[in-house]
Length: 365
Image 1 (cartoon, one colour):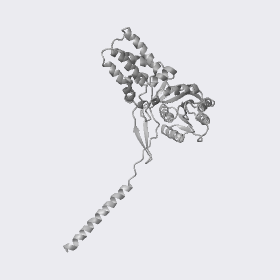
Image 2 (tube, one colour):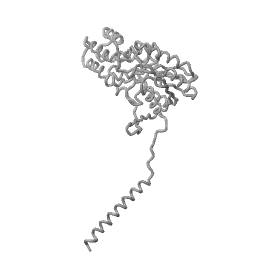
Image 3 (cartoon, one colour):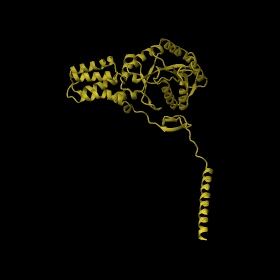
Image 4 (tube, helix red, strand yellow):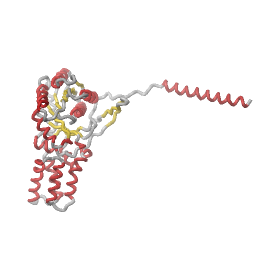
């Protein structure tokens, strides 16, 4: 009897466990699934949200990103310049070696020969007249003079709310400088200010340029006008301006094809883009030249040619965080009189910031 009842008991226990397990599964399936939360509100001043797209899973994750710090991001430029400053400060007097170290540091930072001389000559005179007698006084004076070379320029992005039709900001520059990405970041900033934005995909020659700009438009809450691949960029920008005017949109951000400043035909086409942009209902209030900071003095020749072709009003200096050649800021502003308005300090949407010259010089020291 005992031999027969024991297997029956085990069988009953197994049945009970199976029934209990199926019951738990059935109850869980009856529970409603957790809702997928999507960001439906526009980007605000209080918190800018960066959407990180995971391509494999096609999932968007909201990540709060802090504003970039110039001091934290200029480590490469500071290491190129700061070593000479530290060396000068360890000495008890100002000697010929002091001048050699400072001049070399300025040139390595790509300040340029002309600017380096403009900074050094007045300091030499002040040392000779005994107005400056110690290395610390010399470094302090150099710091003040470098700041003075930059502070007198108007760096505000020009937006005229009194004009009829939209403001137009043209983005120009060579291939790979970061025009399209900069447009996306500027769009997010302007949306945060409460302005409506239309993007014009005027780079009709680079593969996937339109798709890239469309992604930025979606992320920043902007509208976009695109043309056929290989089409006339002037007509795309003209159509975007007309559409923006019809929809009462405040600002048109116009992308253009990247081109080398040495290509005469392409530069002539850029002149045409500039002319056609204002034939419609809008007004060009900014022409922003995007320069990769890692190009150094080559950026100066770019700025000179583009300024002649398109009446450049400001510079967007990208990749400054990855460059030891931040001195190009001084060369551009001193030799061309074009203000640096925005600087790129990283990859996220908040890493394009207004250029603050005093903060920049302080970071170098």
